[in-house]
Image (tube, rainbow, N blue to C red; front, side, top):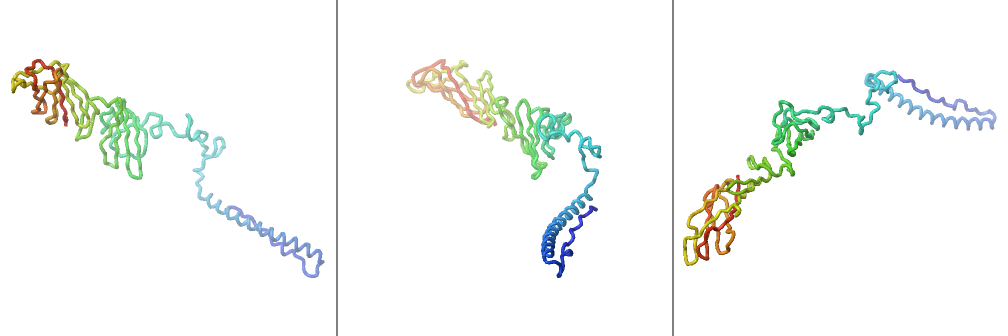
Length: 310
C-alpha cells in the first residue's frame, strides 16, 4: 500500500487571546488567517494527490510484472527485442514480420479455393493437392484474398499471364467466376456454359467454305468472299429477258449455326442480276441467281449468313 501525505495542521490554535497586546494580536491573527487559507488549499491538493496515489496503487496491484517489457540493456527482466528499435512502417526494418499475410517469405498456398476465408491476405499459388481452382487460369500464379468478417463475404482475385478471374463467396456459397478481359484474352476460342461465356469474347476462323466470326453473346457470322472464285449461271428463261439459275448451288457454312440463319447473296460484277438464297438447315444454304437482261454465266458471287451458335 502506498504511503499517503499527512494534512497541514490548523493554525487557528496559535491565535492570541483577549488581553494580549492589540498590535501583536492584530498582526498575528492576520498572519494565522492567511496560513489557515493556505492550509485549506494545500489540504485540498493533498486530498487529490492521495486519491491519485490510491488509484495508481490499485492499478499496480492488477499488473502482472511478467507482462512488462523493459528497454534493451536495462538489466531488468523481459528486455525488448529487435522490434523495440524498428519503425512501424516503411523500409526494410518495418515492424511487420516477413511473410505476414503472405507478404515476403515463401507465401501462402491455397489447398481449396472454395474454402471460406477467415482474413485478408496475399497467396502465392495453389498447393500440390489443391482443388476448385479458378478456370481457365493456371492455379500456380499468385493472387489476393479479401475478407469482410462482419458479413462473412470474401473475394479471390486470381492472377496469371492469361488474365484475371474474380471469385466471390458468401459463407459456403460460391458464385460463378467473373473473368477480366484484356488485350491478351479478348481474342481466342469462344465458349459458354449455361449461357455464361467461359472463353474469349471474339473468335475468328476460316476453311475452304469461307470464314466466320463467333461472338461470346452467341452471335455467329459466316462469309464467303467473291475471291473464292465460285460462280453461278442464270440460263433458264422465265419470261422475256428474265432468266434464273438452272441448278441449285449449295454453300456449306464454315461453321454450323445453332438454328437456321439468315443468308444473303451478292453478285460481284453486274447490277442487272440478283443473287438469291434459301437456308433449309443450320449447316448450308442454297445459292441461286435471277437475271433481268438475258442469260448470264460465270457470275462470281459472295455470301453472308447471320445467326447464333448456341
